[in-house]
Amino acid sequence: MSDSGDSVKARKKRFDCNPSDTSHYPVSDFRKSREYNRNAQRLFRQRRKEHLKKLEAASRERSSSHTEELEHLRREINELQVENENLRTLGSQRASPVPYVKSSPSSYATSPFPTYEAYNGHGVGELGSHSPHSQSLPNSDAVSNLCVLFPHDIAEVRRDLHEMMAPILDLNILTDPQLHLRTLATLGPSLPAALQPTYLQLQTPHHIYIDLIPSPSLRDELIKAGFETANAFLTEVCTFVYETEDHRQVTIWGEDHLSEFSWEFSEEVLNKWGDSILQGDWRSRANFWRRQRNVPLLPE
Image (cartoon, rainbow, N blue to C red; front, side, top):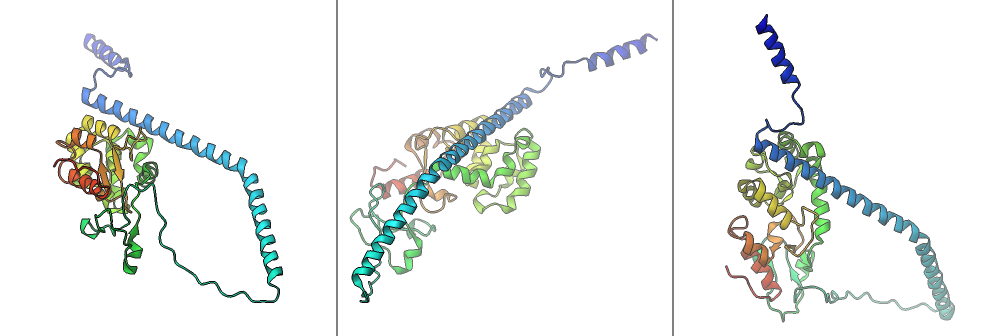
């Protein structure tokens, strides 16, 4: 009878445990769970901020639409009056045809590059002259590949990446590492080549925002570095992943923001992370883009 009473007391004690007491959980699991919750909260705040911005823009657009419509109608009336006056002056005479002249590209004073360059995305050898005095334009065969090299808008790149990777940014997935890996494996075949997950990504629980980086080699380096190091790099450097203050930590050039060749990490970033995460060709790529702007190169 005593043994039975002890058993009942043991079961009661087990069920009376405080469910909010996390002391019996492993420290690593609790830390990861807390970090996933932080990421979920950060994503919620970011989405709410973007939603508010859209609502404000829509409100401004509605308030100004009436004025813009009136201005548009006024311009049309003025153009019709001018055209009517010209027709009245010409009378029955037929105007001589005006030849079409194809103009050269206008000057882009804000471009950081001294010349126009033809770049078809296949590598350094396909770019135009490096000379700051060269003013020649690409021939007719290269017109389709003409790219005036301005930096991409980081906010637009971030929106594009978030749209493509939206299925894994769901709040439920952010807090469940195994669901994250299964969803990533399902999404992978539909992604561009630069975003398709590596074997290491599909086998190792990792920081979910690593998946948004369009560089397989850099993603693997961050996974190998561990959760805390990856989180520090993402929040300090990857402005195209996190909506954080942009100090030109990374600049994206060229036509394709998914090509890692188009990325230029800043000197400060390379000095801090060049011996760990950003090894290999990243400094050479930065020097390539610095050479296009005729600025001092970084030591390699």
